Length: 559
Image (cartoon, rainbow, N blue to C red; front, side, top):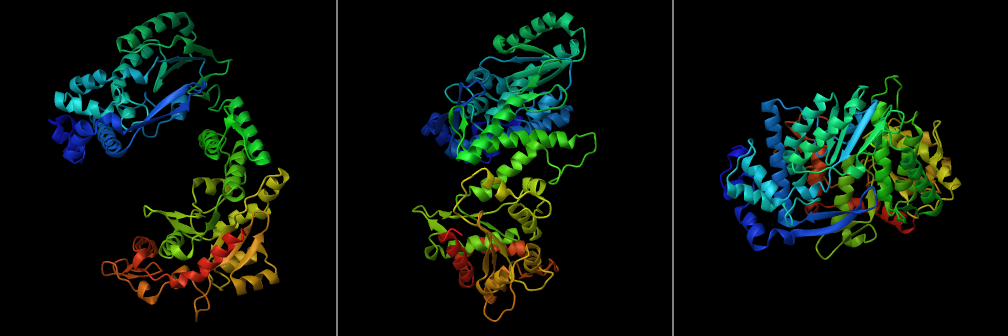
C-alpha cells in the first residue's frame, strides 16, 4: 500500500505500524495537546523562538508519520523525476552550506524573509493539503487524523518531528511558482525554511528588480504568505553578502564577528573557567556547537580546495587548531569523570558489563537508581572523524594511543597541549585519563610498543610490571594501565579475564574465536562482546575485579 491509498484512520494506524488503540487514545482520550511541553531558544536577533516538544506515544506517532511522508516524497520524486534542489531545510544531505553555495561569488544577492512562517501552517491548511493535493487526495477522515496528530493549538509546532516534512510538502507549490519567476528574471533561487534567496551575475537585474519584486510579492501573497519587508535586502558584490548566516562573496565562510567572538569565549573559558553568551553564562555544549558550525564550513572549503592542498592533523588551519584545542580541553582538561581509553570497542562493552554485574562493589564507578537504571561514573572514550582528522588517531586499534599521547607530552613534532593550557593558567580536572592496554609482553604487541614509544624509565617499567599502572603525565593525570595477569598466565587480553565456561559459550551452533576464522563455525569478538553486554547477569566477572580495583583506586585518588 502507498500513502495515497490509505482510506481510513485504522488503515493509517496499520500503515504507520501503530496500534489502533494507541492512536485512538492519543486523539480522543488523552488529547493531543496534553503531550506537549514548551521552552524558548533565542533567535539570531535575540528574540525568543518558542519550541513545543511532544512526548510519549504522540512523539512516536509523529516520527512514524514523518518517516512515511519522507519515503513517499522520495517515491514521488523518483517517479516524476523531480530534482530536490530548491528547499535546503529539513532535507537529507542538505544544509545551510548547500543553500549558501548556490549564491557564492555572485554580483547580486537578493534575500527575503517570510512573515510568521510557521504559524501560517494552520490546521485548515494542513487538512486542505492532504485532502486536495494531487499526490495525496486522502479521504477526509485520514486527512483530519493527520492534521490532529501534527498540529498543536491549531498550527504545526516547531519541535514536532512531523512539522519539517509537512511544511516542505506544502511549500512545494510555492517553490515551483517562485522558481518560474526566478527563471523569468534569470535568477538562481533557493529556500531555507522561511529564508528565500535569489542571486545573479546579470548586470541588467538592477533595471528589472522592481518588476521582479512585484511579481514575487504577488505570488507569495497568492500562496498564503507575506514578506517581512524589514528583512528584505539587496546585497552587492562589493559588500558582505550573507546567506543563511554564511558569507558567500568569494568562498563560503562564517562572519568574522562570529569567529572572533567564539575565540574570545575560548580564551575566557581557558583562563577563568567560564564565558558569556548573550550576556549569560555559556555552556561547553553551546561553545562546541559554535566550533562545530565553524568546522563544517572549514571542512567544506578544504574538500573543495582547488589548489590540491592536503589537509590533515599536521596542516590545520587556525580555526581547526581552535577546535582541536577545545576537544583536548573538554575531554582531558575539564573532564568531569575518569576517562578510559581502550584498544578497541569490544573492551568497552566488557568493562561496562562487568561494572553492571558488580555495581554493588564499585559504587564510585557505577550506581543503580530506584528505577533500575545504571549510571556510570566513568567515561568511555569514543573515537570519531574529528579525532582522526585533528589528532591523527585511527578509529580502532592501539596505535591511536600513541597519536593521542603525542599531544600530552609534545612528541613527534606536535604541540604539547598540557603545556598550552598551563600557560593559560587553566584549572585542570581532578579526574584521571587512563590508557588501558592488554598485558602482552611480545615486543610487536601494542603495550610493549607503547612503552618503547613513551620511553618509560626503568623505574616506571618496574612499577607497571608490579602494579599494572603508572603515571605518565602528572598535570593532565594521564595514566597507563595494563590488564592484570590471571593466575598462571604470562600475558593476557581482556578476554582472558572470562572463565572457560564463558569463553566456550556457543551461539547458534558456533564457538567463539579471537581470530578471523570460518564464520560458519566461529563467531568473532564483536558478536561475543555484544552477547556479554546483553547477558551480563549470567556471566561470571570475578576475573575482572583486579582491573576494576585499579580503576577504582585511580578514580578515588584522582590520579
